Image (tube, rainbow, N blue to C red; front, side, top):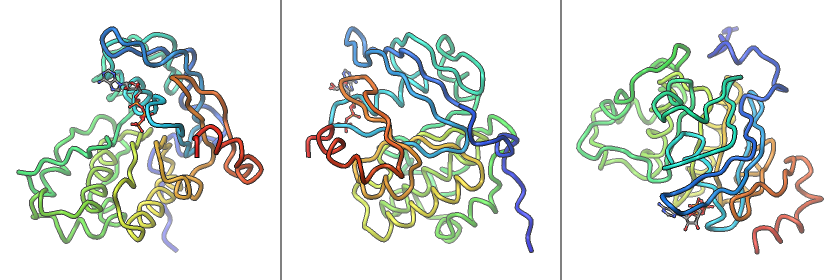
Length: 248
Ligand code: ATP
């Protein structure tokens, strides 16, 4: 049998300790105060979602975790280190990466060039072979131009790109948006494999059925705060509450 090496040292640690601890996080776009004291944890090796209505502050939370807002305050501890005062590039170097909603694939570059674009920031990133094992389509499309890819392939490339860097907390903003069901399933399987390999994932997701199929826990966001936490295995009992939060 093939022995699978842990991808990062963190993979060997028990899944119970918090990799990310957010306390009383506030965030601003210029003068506009959007996050109003967010608190939540993400454990090492966990897949969690941020769920909530449009405009609740889910994307803004991800930008705040990355240090990409004009101002933030409170506490964001990552791997035992306070990051609230750090600039975005140092937070990235500490090992947090974002797969943005718009995917950020450069149209004029090939798949290979897009893949190799972000620098490796830490040891422990996936090798090319490991990436092609996860995303076989990308190997076949290596010399294709970014624009020639389907939406699903672009999303795979956007995910693959950050896995090379050595980041171990991956933030994904609506990765299934606009994709066909068969591609959504493929992304679900990819997330499950990344979890097995020790990655920790925070997901913003509108497709609740998909979210329930991949996540361990859901943090409910309302008006710039986390107002509830629902374990995925307690979802059934909490569906009415959740529908009330989401206004559906
Ligand atoms: P959606 O699903 O609509 O993206 P969301 O929960 O991700 O919802 P955010 O995009 O985080 O919501 O938006 C939270 C609030 O911040 C909203 O009121 C939005 O109008 C505001 N906002 C978002 N981007 C900016 C910006 N660049 N400048 C000022 N305000 C913004």
